[in-house]
Length: 138
Image (cartoon, rainbow, N blue to C red):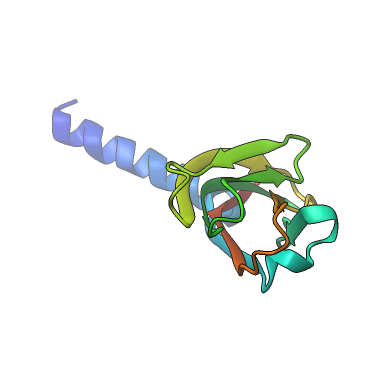
């Protein structure tokens, strides 16, 4: 069997495998969600909580990026909702925002959340957190 025949055979086998697999097993869907608080001074006990859409049944969320507008209120956010507290810190405390890659999983029916500690109630800052990732078959 020559190289061209082997390539055609491999392509045919791959096509056959894909044709007999459920589409959902190969599907990856983009996920992006944003949550915000208009005034950090209104957060109870200086803890600002953010809730994002629940991961659909049969899916798993791989969170790949998080960004946040924090102003000078806080230097970090805490990602939660999957059994782990994952701290994401500003690269430079003088910056008003953060953007960083992450690799964090949320299983089906879990709800991604975030928390910001905002102890200075004299600052009235709009806080926004955006999470980005992919939904995969569970």
